Image (cartoon, rainbow, N blue to C red; front, side, top):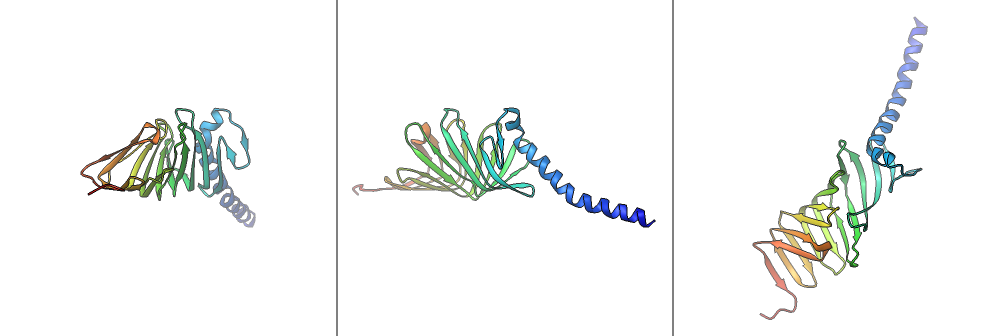
Amino acid sequence: MPDRLARRRILITLTKYTLPVVAIALLSSIALWPDFIRGRGIGPFKVGGITAEIDGAQLRRARYHGVDGKGQPYTLSTDTARQLDAERVELSKPQGDVTQANGVWINLRAEHGIYMQKVNTLDLWQNVVLYRDDGTTLNTASATLDIKNNTAAGGEPVHAEGPFGVLDAQGFTITDKGTAIQFAGPAHVVLNGANP
């Protein structure tokens, strides 16, 4: 009887420590499986352009370097990344940078995001800020970025400021590699240097 209790205690202790390790390994393999299939190199804390610290069932301080549909590099970083399923990755405080071939640099950030891996889109919400290097800043509650096609859109009220002045509208669409921004009305605009 004491031998049976001792074996059971050892088994319980061993299970207590090995199950979390197995869970982390499984979650990591699900998140990184596409990179394994492509045969990309694996080093410590870096797989296929992803760098991160593994903490429990999520990646902390994750940074992803990728290339859009036109071959232009971009970087997406986040405080934490958690794989929700085979398609979706939940991001906490995501931030991204992309420099277009025409030289336009765009930065975006938000409190929350969902990255859809197959379609290469990023849904952002809560305190979404898009900044373009000419000083134009857009603030809105939510936005969707199509990374493959270099477009972004939002259907909620947006406040924009920049060299042109100040604009408040009911939504926006960014096209032409970040050089063209269309706003949905009704809109209110105050132009800098405009005559009354």
